[in-house]
Amino acid sequence: MVAEFFLRLNAENPLLLGLIRVLFVVIAILSLVPPLIWWERRLLSWMQDRIGPNRSGTITFPDSFPLKGLAGKKVRTFGLIQPLLDGLKLFLKEDITPNSVDRKIYFIAPAIALFPAFALGATLPWGPSTGLYGILTPVADVEIGILYVLAISSLGAYGIVLAGYASNNKYSMMGALRASAQLISYELAMAMSVAAIIMATGSMKLTQVVSAQEEPLWGVVPWAHNWFILTPFGLISAIIFLIAVIAETNRAPFDLPEAENELIAGYHTEYSSMKFAVFFMGEYAAMFIFSGVFATLFLGGYNILPIDWSYLAATTGNGFFKMLAGANYWLAPLVFLGKCFMGITFFIWLRATLPRLRYDQLMDLGWKSMLPIAVANFIVVGLWIICTTLYGAGGGWIAAIAAMILFVILYLNILNTSRKANPATATRSITMVKSPTKTESP
Amino acid sequence: MTLNQIAFIVLSCLALFGAVGVVFFNTPVRSAMALVVNFFTLGLVYFMLGSELIGITQIMVYAGAIMVLFLFVIMILKSTNDTDKPQLGERRFLFSLLGAGIVFGMIYRYVIMPTMGRTDIQFTRTYGTPQEIGKTLFTQYAWPFEIVSMLLLVGIVGSIMLAKRKF
Image (cartoon, chains in turn cyan, brown):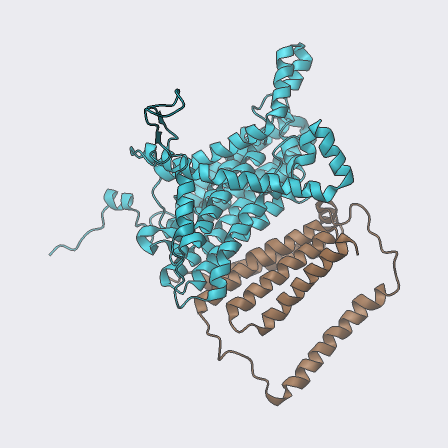
């Protein structure tokens, strides 16, 4: 019935349906950001052996309370409304604008920072492309789905750069410069890792990327799905993409633009009240959407497990598998949200685990490790495609794995020796402990 | 007026404002931002013409990458707004008239004249798709493409040589 309604709307008033599609994405992001902030604070404090926000919203009903079930009891919300109260506090705070800022750019920068985070979700399919979900998602199934994501995410630098410039503050400026350099560096590795996936799929449409992951696993196992993270080159792509995403969203351990022990608060040092809240929200929205992009590219999108339920149902004739296939279809949005949630949990876990990188380490990682690996991976995918068309699935995999081993040997033998023991850059603390520089003795 | 026409008018007005802003803003950062607006809206106009790949390339390469580098350089150089304007003196008016005349003449010769009076311009369904552009680029224009890639390689190697730390 719902499906019929939307089908009719699609035929009669496509513009209205388009707006509804946009609203689904925007409302999902807007309503899920506060719980994300709560989850980050609670999970982080649990990992750091603290308690975290758990008091707000605890109501103790008096013994004389008219409802007998509630009288004398405590209702806990585990601090779930803390982010809402924080938002309220930010609304009511005094909005300080320093005197010497470039006013127009200072005001417009948070809005520019928020725009890419919301616009990114436009090509993400959060449900299957057939039936009801096919009408509702994605907002625009354009030919250039992945390129759109890359293009919009590269616009994310502007909000930060303009905020840093307009604040007229050394620390803000340093933060902005760091952020833009970091974005440009990691975008390359990100684009190369995605290019490998585009080649393996043969299309840039994100719906096509998902349906390419519903093919038989490795081209030979018919009852399993070929999620890209299960293939060798896809795994490498996934790792590189994940690292690049963390750098793009300025999260720990790549949060140099807002490193508080060096730059106060980085690019948003001079921002207070709602303008700061907008930056904060943009960061979380970007995290959320990028987790969705990761799920779409590597984790099979909205499918719950890499198992082809309808194939199993057809071959075994078991009704249970048929039911699971139905569940896989109807629960698709929830599964997609769950995958986003897992991605964010991973982000938080990393923040709790890893210390912040130093700036030259950050650049080394981006340019000297991730980019070469991504390019090598790209060549491996090309070989795999050629050999698969020439010799079938088995030949393709043999060629791909052989090429990977070759690259690893090359890396260990040639590239690794050229970077040994440069006294100017060998300042990692662990190296210093192991081989301390000789102090001049009297 | 159809929806497409309204969208086109809005987008092209924005693009024009951006282009004018590049010239007339006083601070370099604002000029650069006006250029970003211009590039971005031009990309959207390409979308409307059905050529998504060109549009997204415009946004990704120009608005996303090149202008970020521009901003970077402007911010590092910290140029102030007063002294750096080019001075043409009394011949300024003549020069600007000449430049405008050349530009409009070229637009008339190469854009307006060939399309005047024609209403039958239509594209095939696959026009501007990534597949089609890829095929054309790697078959018909393979030779220029390879030469351009060599040029870029030379550029990269040259910039590394210039920026390399001298020990």
